[in-house]
Length: 147
Image 1: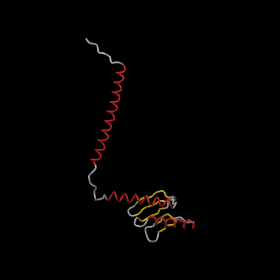
Image 2: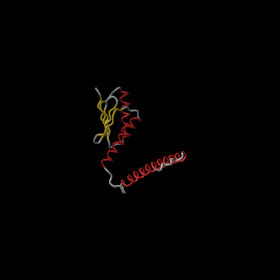
Image 3: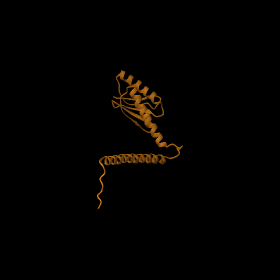
Image 4: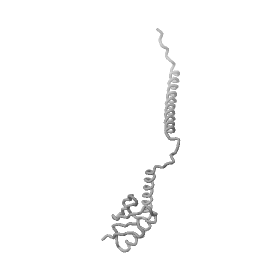
């Protein structure tokens, strides 16, 4: 029987380095192939056209959220403290810090209604009165004063 000849020390180190670098190269190659396949999969999954018909429920929900965000920003800008803003069928209900309720119309300009609210609040504060509810949906605001 022939005895297997041992490789010299330098040759063994060289072979180990080659194996190490090849394994790193193959690992990077596999990761690259995986990334390319996932990106191609996402590209081919998308439809090739854009639908001209909008999703009405999504569009209405987005408009409601945008209006609520606009109301909140306007109230913060005018330094009117509130606890919540919610959308009802055709109006927005704002609950102020003191528990008063204000109703805005969704058909009118939001910023003008906020300006009206600030004006009414300042005048009622000067008179020393508080209100339980304020409705700005009509031409003339409807104010219910607290007893």
